[in-house]
Image (cartoon, rainbow, N blue to C red; front, side, top):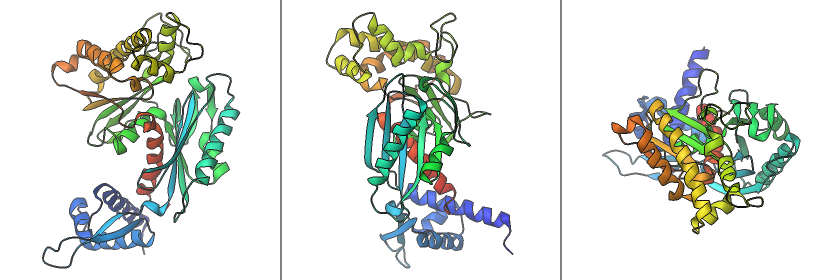
Amino acid sequence: MITADQILVKQINKAIALNTIYKKKPISRAEIAKVTGLNKSTVSALVDELLAEELIMETGTGESQGGRKPVHLSINKEVGNIIGIDLGVNYILSVLTNFAGEIIWERRISVKKNGNSSLQRIDDLFQLIEEAIKNAPPSVRGVIGIGIGVPGIVNYEQGHILSAPNLCWTDVKLKEIVETRFQVPVFIDNEANAGAIGEKWFGSGKKATDLLYVSAGTGIGAGIVINNEVYRGSQGLAGEIGHMTVELNGIACSCGNHGCWEEYASEKALFRYMQKKTSVESLSVFDLIDLATKGDHAAQEGFKYVGKYLGIGVANLINAFNPEIVIIGNTLPLVGDILMDELRKEVGLRCFASKYYSVKILSSELNMHACAMGAAALVISRLYASPVV
C-alpha cells in the first residue's frame, strides 16, 4: 500500500528532478543523481515519468566515460504556453512564453491614469489574455496558466487584491474572476514581488542569493529575496516600502498617510516637480525620459531630484536587509545614468553598511518586462513544484 507520505516524497523528488533539468540543461540521469543526491534508480524512474508526460525530452548523447554514452535531457519548451501580465497603473503588458520562459509574443496597451473603473480595466485585461491565447502556437497542453502582477497589497495564496490604491481597487477577487473566465490556473502576486522573481529567474539576479528589487514607477514597491526565496512576511504584506514615511508632515498619499516615500521618489513626484518648471499636461513618463536623454535641462533636473529621494530610501533598505545586489526596475530607471548616478551617490552618502561592503545597485536587466516575466515564472515554478498539474 502506497501511503500519502510516499506520494508526497515522490512529488517533491519529481519537482527537484524537473527543476534541476531546467537549471542545468542539458543534463544526464547520472548528473541529476549527483547534483540532487537522489539515487540513480529513483532518478531513472522519475525521468521516465517526466518523459511520458512530455515535460522533458531527450536531446542527444554526451561523451562516454567508459560505459554507455549518457543521454542528455532538457525541458520540452513546447509542452505548454504561459501568459504573464503586468497590470500597471498606466498600462497593461501581456507576454506569452513557452515552458522555458522565452517570450514568443507580447503586447502593451495604455490605459487612463484615472477614471478607468475596475470593470473596464478587467475587460482590458480579458481582451489581452484572449489575444495572447489566439497567438499561442500549438503545444502539448495549450495555455497552462496565467500569472498576474498587481501594484498593491495581494493575498498571494488566494489571489485576492486587498488594496491597490493607485488602481482605486479594494477587495477584488482577481484570481477567481480570471479563472472563471478562462478555466486555467491563475497565480497573482504583488508587482514588485513578480519583478524580483523575474530578475531572479531571467535577469540580473540569477546568481544572487539575497537581493532587493525596487519597482520605481507610478508608485514604489520592493520585492525581497532572502536565501533564494521571496520574503512575504507573516501576512504576505512585506515590501510595501513606498509607504514608509520620509516626511513627518509631508504630502498626502493615496494610501491615507502623509509623507510617504513614493510621493517623493516616483513618477508622481517627477510630474509634480516638472509642473513647477514647464507644462506636462500631455506628456507621459516615456516622453520625459526621451526629453531627458536628448539633453532637456528641466527633465534632467526632474530625474535627478527623484534619483536623490530614491537613493535615500534605498540606503535605508540596504541598512535593513544587507543584500548582495539592489535592482531598480519599472519606468524611472529607463532614463539611465541621469537618475542612477544620483541614486548611487545618495546611497554612498547615507548608507551605513556601505562603509563595510560595496553593494551593487543595477538597473533592471529585463526593464519593463520584469513584472510580466516574473508573473510567468509564478506559473512555471508552480508546475515545477507539482508536475502532475
